[in-house]
Length: 386
Image (tube, rainbow, N blue to C red; front, side):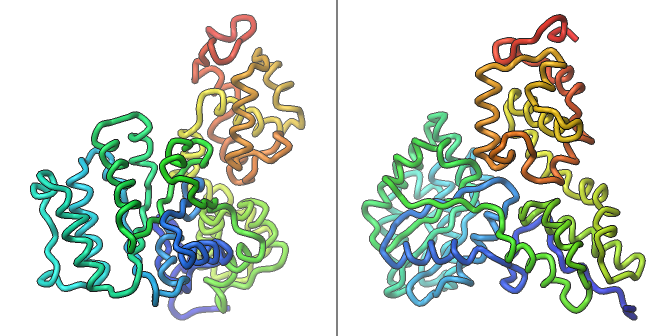
């Protein structure tokens, strides 16, 4: 198959997916959200790993849920961790006005100074005017990166205690307002936030099922790339259905196909681009490491190496002078709960992550470089000083 002009790479990495035609799967999640909204639920909590597609889900909610009863406004809190309440509310008001297409001459956005003096400017003056303009529909705020404020809330920073107190006030007083916050950690880590939400329904944004994953592989390049069944299975094995890694792998496959003008993809072609995929995914892969505690990092590297040498992770650690401790056992539980390890505890969930760990974080180097704390892991012999 030859093209007069090189086709554009249809696989998307590095940004949320805004185009509904490029988004695949999550049908049950959207039904969950829609059912709860129609039953008058005020808060629906979503959570998941970083790069799992949380921002893309928020972008797609207005495309997959009927808008005859709801008005959706997306508000990203990623860069708001150091802002005070008046600044957050001012920017939220700007987002509401922009995304509801309401004429600025009809509804005035309160300034930060006005909100600093009187928060009623937002909830008693601004919001009622918005409700009047949107008629009988409910205003639904889609709050991305909510854990940016959540982490600060747990640390009891004053400004964000004010934010959450105000958040609770809105839930009690605003009948035409609902929230869908998205957080990047497990719900079990946010017991205080769950208490704030008062038994709000929640659901994980997890890996794609096989049907959705296959659609994500084949549909974007339909009519251009032809995938053999064994090539699709290889991508599924490497990615475990994680959408970010599917996109990275397929992006690299498309680049190779365009360079060589070879558009029929077989099993060997997938193997040829694995190293390039690891390079392209470095930013996302690094998060799997940087967000872990020291015991979790040790276990992660140990499991990766144990898959290569076919030995149980703790047996392997003993050979390096590391014995099992409570901290290490808890690290295993955490990695399993986070979907980083299989339930068997002796295999990395995502094969591409396994190969990256073997390349970038070999166990001997990590034990030495991390200078493992004796209070967490007891080292035998002179390993602690090596």
